[in-house]
Length: 176
Image 1: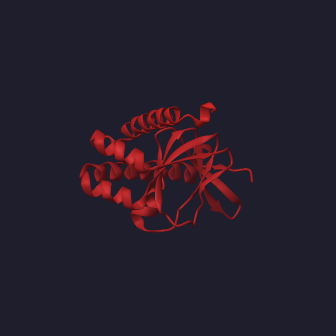
Image 2 (image 1 turned 90 degrees about the vertical axis):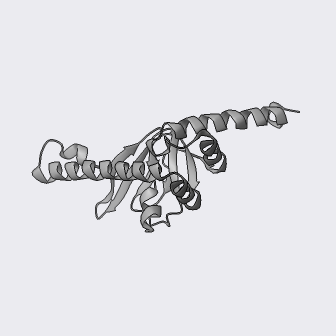
Image 3 (image 1 turned 180 degrees about the vertical axis):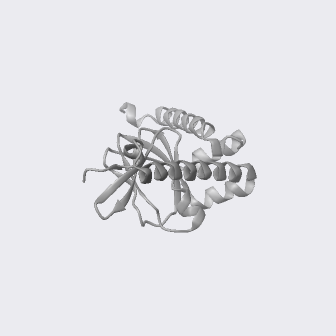
């Protein structure tokens, strides 16, 4: 029997993975006030996905059925333009993406593409809303994060329109 067939090794690997995922969730502001038992449940019920560089996590226009948390790696947020995809943000460890589509019940507003090998937790829409109902502080943290994003986007737009040096940081064309 090889090491990959050892049930005890598989249990240990799953346990270590669960502990690591709980730690990631604990470091995400919107999950910071959730009690440890619920964090374990979220980590256990979420789906752990891996993406190679260039893989799509999701595409603009897709149905928003889950939120993703980057556990390892980095990804780019891109929007479609007449001249091709435009990078509008970078994502890394502990970043959350995909919440706009499920909160607003609209299709995905952007495409997320792995820039490096990525491990992400996929939290279903149903579980996400259950958490918000059980932990009202989570809704406040979501609002704060969305407000920060609007503020950053507004500032980038202002700099781009003004033709300031910050134009290159506002958005970067993506080579297709």
